[in-house]
Image (cartoon, rainbow, N blue to C red; front, side):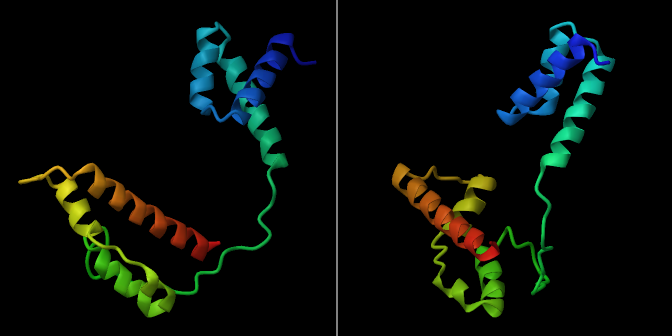
Length: 140
C-alpha cells in the first residue's frame, strides 16, 4: 500500500507537470519541502510511467524524401541554404530573406557592429517569423 506522502507527491507532480513545470524544478521544490530523495525519485518514476501510457502513439513515421548535403555552414549563408531548398521544392522561391544573413552575421560577430533601428529589428523579426511559419507548414 502506498504511503500518504507518496500519494501527495505523485499528485503534486502530475498537477505541476501538466502546468509545464520541468521535472528538475519540481524535484528541487519537493526537496525544499523536506520530502526524501528516494520518495521523490520513486514518485517521479511512477508519474513518468503513467504519463507514458497516456501519450498518443505515433501512427506513421515521418518519411525523409530529400537529403541535402552542405558544402558550407548553412547558418552563415541563408541565401545558400535557400538555393539548396529551391532545388528540392520550388515553393521556396516565395521566400524573401531580405537582409537576414547580414543582420545575423553582424549581430553575432560585432566587429564594427552598428545597432539596428527598431524598424529594422521588427522587419527582420517579421521576415524570420514568416519563414518559420512557411517551414512549419511544409513539415506538417
